[in-house]
Amino acid sequence: MIYKIGEVHNGQAPLMKMFGYVSTLRTLSSGRPSYAMEFFNYAPLPKPVDENVIAEVEEKKKR
View 1 (cartoon, rainbow, N blue to C red):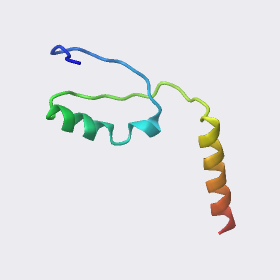
View 2: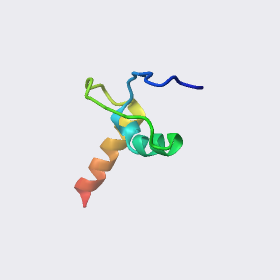
View 3: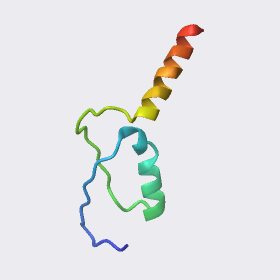
View 4: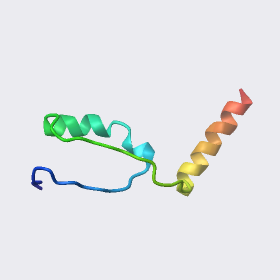
């Protein structure tokens, strides 16, 4: 997909998916685009992620 100069794209993504995004963006684009992120809202974790986080916390409590 080819984008025009000055084109703006807005979207929403979970914060945990954004780590490393700016590095990848700059690598793929030779450092040309800018990037900004702002808080939108809190949302429940998906059930499998929720269960995994709870299990990790419970495991740490046992130590």
